[in-house]
Image (tube, rainbow, N blue to C red; front, side):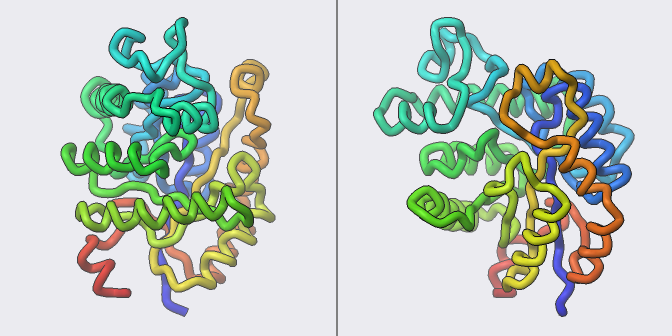
Length: 287
């Protein structure tokens, strides 16, 4: 078998101190090689400092236009993204409903994303290897355009390309938008892993599901793979505030399991970061 690059990326770093510490454990004692940092996360200022002791851990921006935590900008600056209290819509469904109905001004999305990147890079001093979005909003083509432009303008060399293996209309739409995002990034000269897993397993990537997912991805032709995960050690308060039904501790246990390391060895998958991706030209030539 040809050896392949595997990026194991953990989302929501900065959401809380406990979830962030769990993510670091998944790197220190496990297979996580990259984190996506949530600029609006309540613990992001404290948790960002902990990344300085881990130079081998890739750091990306996890841009949010939905969720429980408030935006960086005021309601006056981004009126179509927030309610009267200045709070984001909670989830991607309500965002998409409003966006398709023309009630979301993409200029507001761009302003908020710019503010979040500024905070991550300049206020918190993080060097970003890639960018993605909370709840994968950049699959939606108007948001994809914004994220692609911001990555290019700020010299961030890679963007996540999520996809789904789920049957039915939702899976079909995700795959269509995923292909469109790949085409957009390639035209912009940005890198991305050729294969992806984790959207369908979000919050429940247990050891068994991780091993099955890796086996499926390794059987494909892609030379570069990203698996997206959500480990953590949440408090009771985290579970109340972020009532997503995520199995953070089970994901952490699987990602630190010797069994998973053995699976990677058996499948000839080499752990790496977004900075290890080939340049877009080299990636295209290898296909």
